[in-house]
Length: 278
Image (cartoon, rainbow, N blue to C red; front, top):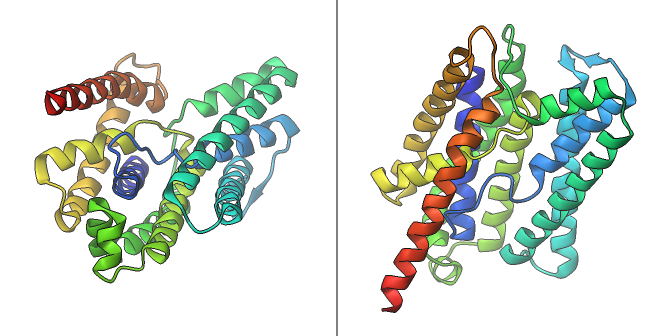
C-alpha cells in the first residue's frame, strides 16, 4: 500500500509538471521539493534528536518541514521576480535544489560516521514500512493532491498546448498554475517525508502512459495513477527479492531503470528534432 500510494503520488506529480512546463523531461523534484525534504531529514539526523509526534517519526516531520520551506522559498522568489512565470519558477527550483544539496554535503562532512551513513541511507529512498502508519501519514496528501489535479484536468489539457491558448479559452493560467503547484508540492512532500527521495518515477511513468493512452488528461490521469502504483510496487518487489535476504533501497532500482530511460528519451527527442530540421 505504501508503494502504491507513493508511486501514484510521484507519477501524478510528474504528469502535472510535464504538462505545465510542456517538457517530457520535467520531474516532480524540479522545484527543489525533494532537496528541501532531504535537507530537513539530514538536519534531524545531524541533531541527534529522537522524537515522534502523534506516531509520526521525527525524520518525517523534519523532511516535510524542509519540503514546505522549499515550496515557500521557490514561490517567494517567483513572486519577487513578478507574476507567476513558469520559467522563473523552474530556474528558482533548480537553483534551490543545488543549494540544498550542497548544504546536505556540508552536514554529511561534519557528521560522525554513523550519522553520515544514516543520511546516505535515507537519501537512497526506501519502503521499509511496518504497519499502516506510513500509509495513513501519506494518504491525505496524495488524495488531496489528486483531487485538485482532477478538477484542473481541462485547464491542464489547454495549458499543455500553450498558455496563450489556455488564456484565450477562458482559463485563469496564473490561478491554475498556483493550484497545480500547491497540489504537486503537497504530494511530493508527503511521499518524500515517508519514503525518502525516490527518483525517476515521475519522469518515466507519465511519459510511458502518454505514449500508450495519448495526451488527453481525462484518460491519462487514471492511467498514470494505476501504472505509477503498479510500477513502484514492482520495483519494490524486485528490490526485496533480487539479493534476498538483503533488501535494497527501491530508489536504487528506479535510478538504474531511470538513467537509461532518460538517455533514450533525450536521444529520441534529439533525433526527432534533426528529422524536423531536415
